Image 1 (cartoon, helix red, strand yellow):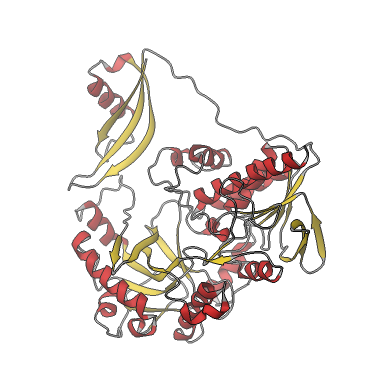
Image 2: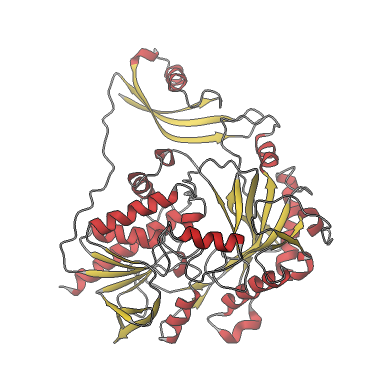
Amino acid sequence: MRKEIEISLLPSNAFSYDAQLVASADKLKIHPEEISAVVIKRRSVDARSKNPTFILLVDVYVNETPHAESKEIIYKLVTGNKKVIVIGFGPAGMYAALRLIELNIKPIVIERGKDVQERRRDLKAIQQDGIVNPDSNYCFGEGGAGAYSDGKLYTRSTKRGDIKKTLNILVQHGAEDDILIDSHPHIGSNNLPKVVKAIRETILRCGGEINLNSRVTGIMIDNQTIKGVRVNDKDEFLADAVILAAGHSARDIYYLLHQNGVLIEPKPFAMGVRIEHPQQLINEMQYHSNNYDKNLPTASYSLACNVDGRGVYSFCMCPGGIMVPAATAPGEIVLNGMSLSRRDSLFANSGLVVSVDENDWQKYSSAYPFSGLLLQQEVEQLAFNLANQTQKAPAQRITDFVHDIVSDTLPSTSYIPGLTSSALHEKLPEFMTKNLKLAILESTKKKPGYYTEEALIAAVESRTSSPIRIPRGKESFMHTQIKGLFPAGEGAGYSGGIVSSAIDGENCADGVNIFLDMGSK
């Protein structure tokens, strides 16, 4: 007999199987010896009181042995003659390619950046020397933006596809199986590269093709049907369809589509700042104690409020993490955050962003559909100029920002390029500063300790999502105008984060399969 129950355990024994066994027996009012196995299905932390506990959703097997079911996907060698180009090798592109192999369709991956290991040199160059490689950085390269941005796997996109399958594929390729049960799973930027490499090897072993250092510079369209792409201004690739998963920072792709008459449109997005606190302060704030139990996960938080009809919310919160320079072109500053698997940095950082819509980009209305994108660029270039044209981030103590004071000194930071004190309260667009201030003050009601002179804000967090949408059919996933073109992932405007992008890539691969089947009948 199998029973699903919920048990509560203190951090000191939450990871002890014996404690789980005893708690399960107590809950079911049976003797522990009657229990054959306790299998954790979900693990979360309840930190509402001064004594945080782990809440475990478990399957308890009573006088019955659980039957282990293999969740691995058997990827076989592609034997069909259908082939599909996948532009971009981030989460959407990787999962699209894997799904195509499941469907016996050959994926031809085109990725502008380097492999996941070689990217490290370019990340070091921007961190230490301020040198931005436009084709290899925190956003571009094998693994995409997610590969070096913590690997957070939490998503609200529960209706888009099979989240469990998405996570199981990561475990199959080397991720720890804790991600299958944690309520807010993550892999860590130190472990993600080996997972990405293993996915690459699966695709190649099964007959897929991966072309790195290959930037798309042209598209071939005939009779409103895409036929292929041109790469590095010389090589041509032809295929039966194209999945476009280039990411939200591939601005040249948007311009390329527009120049070729492919419909794109502006969409709302969000911009703001990165806020960094000492991690100890966040632990105390979230766990209501200055005696942090090391068995608890490094504390994170989320904030969301509505200010004058505009949303302000935390984004990409990185407990025990560092801030990183995520610019994709010279002359701009873009901030992001990441954590290693142990989340043991002394700092916690998160985006705090303000929603942006067509009312904010009116001065660029004549540049439609690039109005929002140009506003995004303007703020990134502003940050670069405030930092004396370096990758040092313009920053301010959070208390000084609220009170319109330029900070004489700045707190210690995780940001390797360093910080420079700046009057962000008067330099950033007014719609951002006004709403950020109000949201920060609102946070004092919900998160005592959040508003402190020990915290800093740094500019600018601008790549929360794409300012462009590539329109597609709701069920077909195909572009509304160009046959055979399947926009996918964050760059197409349909997902946000690793898991939702991966699911979207799979959905587009399924759409391709239906499209190709219809064409063969």
